[in-house]
Amino acid sequence: MSAGIDEIASAIRAARQAKALTQKELGLRVGLPQSHISKIEKGAVDLQLSSLVEIARALDLELKLVPRKALAAVEGAVRAHGTTVETSRALNLLNDQAQLAERIKISFPEISQTEAFHNAIRNIPKLQFDAPQLKALDEALRPAKRLKSLIDAQGNAAKLAKQLSEATSSLRHFRNIQMHTPLVETGRQLPSYRLEDNDE
Image (tube, rainbow, N blue to C red; front, side, top):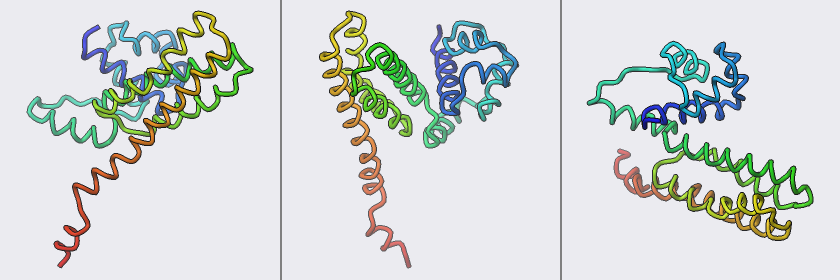
């Protein structure tokens, strides 16, 4: 799969998830079966332009050909709007973890820590992601990624509960840092004394 197709597939999947649509619901809007939407989101089909336009519009997106010289400015505007490739990839990572949490809930209903882990995941997609934040999220998800190996190895509930607590703590720490960092940067870019100096 080429990088361009990968980016489009990730963007479609993230936009659908942001709209809280299932693949079946998106398929109904554009006249395609759920299985085809799934293949599109995996980059496994050669997507026709007409289908891409229909899918984009169903997700409140528009397709435009942009002059290469203007690409940086357009990407900057899109980044400010929060619809970036990094955000798409972050949402994919978090969606995978949410599915894992559901699997744990079904397989180990006695473990109470699963709900807190699920809530920690749910709180993060509200953030906008750039490349450094995506890398930080990947680091924060390291404890969560160990959960799958514990389940696959049929680890005991006590080990799984302990790992869930560690994964939840890591995600909460990540979210707290990301929620406070933009405020600090904004303050640096536009200090209050500068506002007073210019207010004549």
